[in-house]
Structure formats: structure tokens, C-alpha cells
Image (tube, helix red, strand yellow):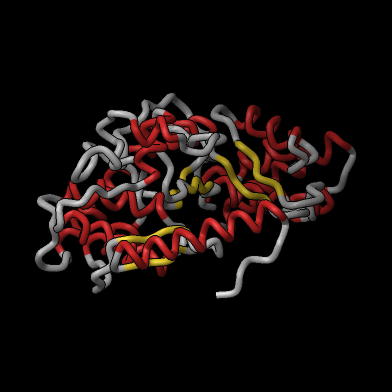
Length: 331
């Protein structure tokens, strides 16, 4: 370190002499606060010192490219200057800038894949992720684990997708290994399909095990699942349905129409999260067979059709009053 600083002092002294400055003043500039007014993330390009200096100067991190080049040369024994995206603090000195380029971790960007997205939505999200490279194909439906993934500027989109698919494989294997006994599911694949339906049925974490139990109870009895999200998936071709379901949708002969078929649809309809996977493999202990929107953000559950019909009537009354701008009926 002392040797490097001696070399730096010599070079800066020469530079100062050319500029009419005293050597001690040049050394002070090396350690003085830089011109950066606010925190900044800068993509440092590949290339030599001159290329890096130009990029830093344009970003406002340094003020003098010649001084930067001299300092980088004098301290070259401390390591090479790296190309990546780095975070620079306000007023970073030339000494700090060089240390960041050599030793700091590159900026970790985050891409969050929300629960319940379809494969086409996930592919679109990846294509829009800033700073990534390459194209990405639409993954298999349900193959990606919704999660927040870290990446760096310049990372490949297809590589991140492979990470997300591997994460789903591990999560599904773990959930299946810890499954309850006597589930009417023959394979992890069937658990994944049902978890995708549960994911789309409710956004309330506390409801997922109960909704999963309803569907599992219906499967045991050979009843159709009658899940609206599966019908919407068929109607919109894997993208969000921008209109209410119609009678024609419910009557349509389609393998994803769980009002017409019995059992599970042939594939997932979305990407389920960890909670939905756990709900399907460790469902609530209940004999309920029905649920309908409560009109209050959740669902009303029932064991009998008679009880369910009362819940449906109440939900329709809530919807009617809401359309009229009146208060919902008292429970």
C-alpha cells in the first residue's frame, strides 16, 4: 500500500507540475470529495481506463479523467478495474471510486414474479426487466416459482428463467414430500395443477388451505370443481380475462372448463406460490364442499347445497346493493 501511494504521489506530482499545481494539492484532490451530488448507480462499460473514465465523467462521478487515469495507473497493484453496475455515494472521492471499481459488489437488481401470473405474463415480465440481455421463450405453464430474484445488469433473461424453474421444481418436491395422507392426488404434477387453481381463487393466505380442502373434497366425491378461474383461463387463452364470464363460457366444451369436466384440468392455469403448494398438500380439515364470494373480500363456505344457496343469495344481495350505492345487508 505504501509503495502504491509513493507511485501515486510521483505521478500526481508530475500531473500537478503540468497543471501548475503543488504536489500536495494534487494528492489532496485524490482524497477530496468528488462532484457527485446524489447517490448514483452507474453501468461501467467494458474497456480500458479511458473508456471507464469517460463513462464516470459523463455520469458526474468524477470531474477529471486525467487525474482518474493517473490514480488508476499508480494503484494498479490493488486490482483491475471491473465492468459492472456499481453504486456510488454522494461526494465519492477518487480514492473511493477506485476502491468501488475494484472491490465493491455490483448492484443487485430485483425482479419480482407475483403469484398467480400465467406463463405468458411471466415471459412478458422478463422481457421488460431493465438491464437484462437476450430474449426468453414462454415457459411451461406453472413451471416458474413466484419469488423475488436477484440479478445484475447484463444478466441473461433465459438464465434467470431457468433459476425460477429450478426453484419451482425444488418447492414442488418439498411440498409433495410433506403431503398429508390420503390425498386424492396421484402425483406432484396434479398437486401443481390444483395449487394453480387455489392461487387464482383467493388472494387471502388464510383461505388457501380451506379452499384447497373444498376442491379435494369434491375430487373425492367425483364432483366437478366448478372453478371460475379455469373457465377464464380457457376463454382468454392464458391471459387476464377483461370481461365477466358469460353463460357461453360456462357451457363451452373445453378441457379447462371445470364446469363441464370432472377432475383436474390437463395443466396448471398459473404459477402458484409456496403457500398455495402447501395448502394443497396440507389442506384444512373440513367437510365443506362449496364456497362463494362473501362480498367482503373473502369467501363464504358451506357443507351443504342448501347452505351454499343461502350464501349465494346473500352475495347477490351484496352485489345488488353495491350497484345501487346502498350499504350491504347486516349479517
